Image (cartoon, rainbow, N blue to C red; front, side, top):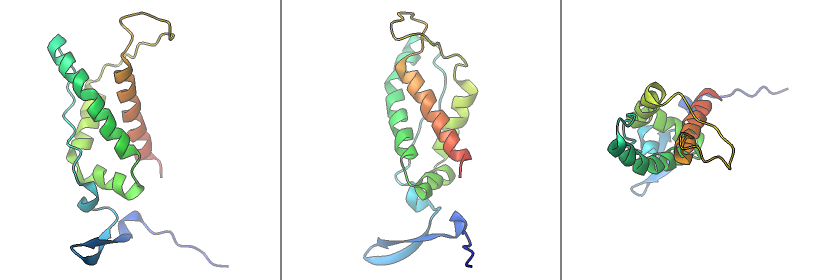
Length: 135
């Protein structure tokens, strides 16, 4: 009976071609976190102008987080370790985001209901946290 010994992701190297030469790069490395996501710091909007600016930038942040969520494991973890903007954004989002997400039926016209963009961003952040905590 053979026992398979699992290796830590930190011990894995991936062969890639760099400048015409094959090079072995650790699975968790800054190489995999390029280009940097460059997520902006999350600050809750205080007034109408800031809210408009944030609502314009929120889809870009959401798209970046969705790309990160779709990345292979070694790329996801390389971004977590080497791109400070990701953890900085998640940390600020958890500290400063509204604790309320208004819920209503699809036919609800309540203006206090959270926008779809806010809900999608909350969902992305939650999914990043879930991926961080699951093997």
